[in-house]
Image (tube, rainbow, N blue to C red; front, side):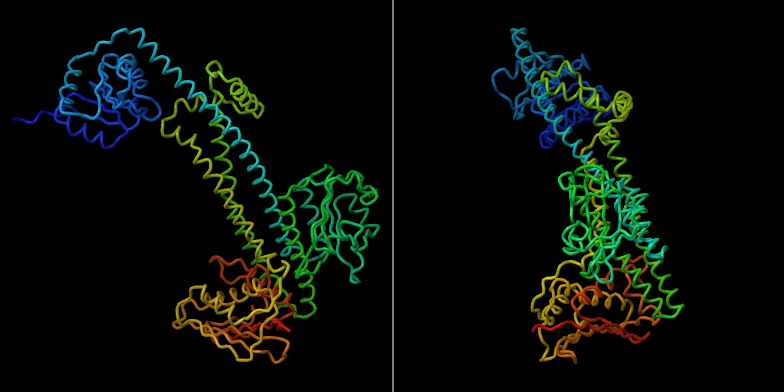
Length: 630
């Protein structure tokens, strides 16, 4: 018996979401028909239009629409093609509703031995008759109306969810844009350390940047006098600032002003509405102040002064403003402290050492700013894509026909979307016309909520990654919780958690080694950084070794820990620079230059001392002296 020519076989389209059912029909009918398959009714409609099959089989229980609904659409699309419902629905009226929808027949599941004969009969023209057509058509139409009402309810819920999502996205956009500005300002303040060596110029440029970037009414910087009794205004914005500077404006460091209180408490002070406290806030130079925030400038638990930010609006500062501006204030404090340290270095070191130190700081800070810029780069692109996606979603909502929306609230919501889009200059009709000519896969990509959330996540992760650098800048300045700590146990646990190869680290602890009086979390960071730096410095060394030794210091009030490696050592010309914020020898390999700066701050604030001894080719040894528990 000869094999039939596949090109002459009739085409049969089977729309069924069950893989097993499609496989069974394919096996039973593939000798007589070219079997086309679709697992979704929407895909089936498109495939039917493209292929013009000779007969169509439909499951009744399909996603997105019933088999009867699909049959009605297919009947209109292909009026001469027989359509057969294949269903396990044996409920009363199921067959009649299928025939009323446009099917020529109804085959019950499970599929049995007469399935092939039935399909052949329908293909050859068999049509099942429907008694009382008008009654069954009415039943089918009622079913369609019920499904339409269900779809409208779902659409209404979707509109409400999209409205909420739009509100959340707008809030997220605003937050990300403001955060981006805050980060730029913080980076610019850090950059000033490299470009402005004069303290007065540094302060003046700082207040100008704060006010110009965020449209604040006024900003000023106070520094504590040498006798610690006065907060002296050292920089003020615009005409008011210049007048107060000319009169050598100052405030007592006490509880009677926000500046004084922020310096004493080392905490931010906020007045959301100064109207009720005129006597406290009355300043003839700043008559329009309505809300104020005073932020302490703290380095190593010591307040250098305070930053005041004032607005001519009540409740002008959000919680995020407070957090971000405090981070910026901490960076300004570090910049001020670095400037003061630079001034001291000028008198203590030779001209060539000073010049090289400044060059190192400039390079390090430039690299840090470049790093921040790279991390911030995805944010504008993500926001742009989210705006585009939202516009297309709005265009879909705006095309809803108000006459079919029976819910008045839904009609009002759709109208609100149209009006607000028009107010923002968004041409919904133009966007919808563009969408109408797009390919289905392109259109689905444009209205993908998953894609929308992915872009938001990209922007959010980028912003959070940038903000994480603040931990390296202000982490050492956090309040300490000192207690008795066994450094031998702490360091042993730290080494174990680092996952270094066996045998790399050798530890030796003296029998008389005392407990230390320190903040366990901060001091753990010290030794984590030192051991990590030692390991990274030995990259390429054939037999890397790290030796850690602990004992009571020659001064019995201290315990001394040494961390030694057999790496290449640290050149003399950079041994002083490694303690400066943003200085790094790691180039583009990921270092931010904050590790050793933070280590020195932590040790200093504990009343201890850290120093380095190293020669090129003979490794490096870090000495850490910390107070003992008494």
